Image 1: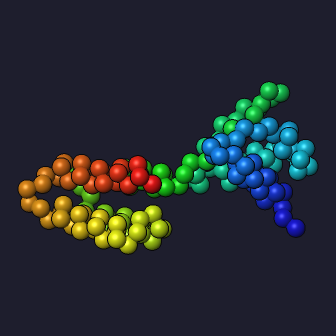
Image 2 (image 1 turned 45 degrees about the vertical axis):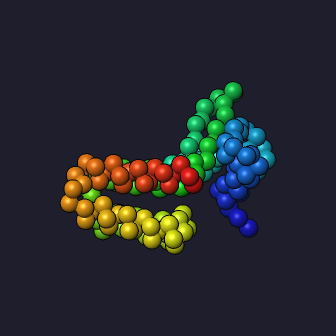
Image 3 (image 1 turned 180 degrees about the horizontal axis):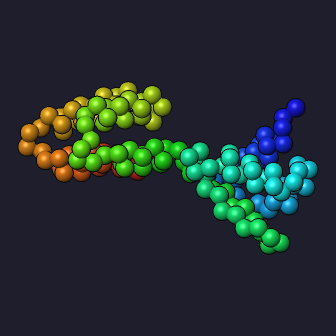
Length: 150
């Protein structure tokens, strides 16, 4: 039998899955009544299993009119944003190549797209007439384009 934390997590995930927009607003008392648990157990699950690094934003207000608002952030967006933050004038070619490999490994791009990206990245680093600032702009443009078309 699953423990209470697993049951609470499953309940919240079911509620999220039932929504098209990836947002749900719940009440602790409703969850506690449904699962027969204490509200503090719900708080524990929210703070450990619905974190930002796992792709969730949780807004909570306690008390009688209290609620829990959970928004699921698409993981792809987080990956792209992380990559954008890592690209600067000091970023070296192997790091950018590893980003392309990561995207391919996690099926965020096809083999063909990865090959094109790799050729572009290598060309940008080898071109003597491109300044580091221009290189950053080109690389970030590539990542933002991917993010917009995902």
